[in-house]
Length: 201
Image 1: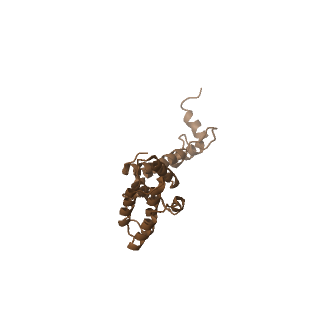
Image 2: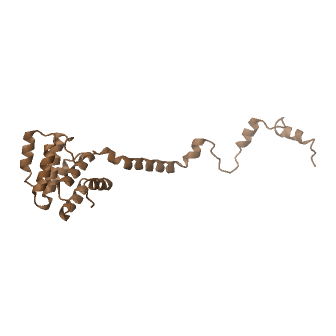
Image 3: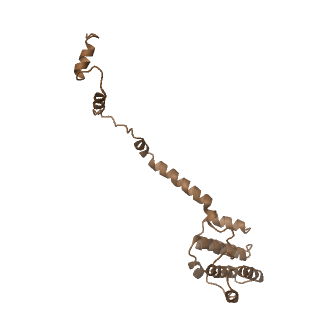
């Protein structure tokens, strides 16, 4: 049996002259392959395996923030023509005329609503007269929709249509559903605009 007195000498010879392992000796021993997977001591490396989860969480946060703030990107009064450009106002007046003709006729109440919007528009008197004279003719909805070039204008197109027609008839409700689809409006925005105008589809 090896005595305790001989242990330090043996350790000294095995370890190259020192019974106490030096830092270099510990480092060399740590580098000996053991067959076990090495642990990554780097803080970054420890997070790499969680990247897909982190990306998904970040994407959800961005989407939630976008949905919460979506309505702030649109006009607070989308059916008001006072803040529209002249080109937008012309398009939106024609959008109202198209909606009013959806059930086959433009009645007196709808005509009065369109005239009221027209008076609040930035158009000059000549433009207003020309548009008013064209109101009795049905408008081509597909042609008008093709001129919508932004989500903001799409929301306004729907809002003015909603504001001018009788929302209690099934024909007009069907028209509004079709219009929302053609304008590719988000469902939550349609619900908000409907509620703002007192309609629940």
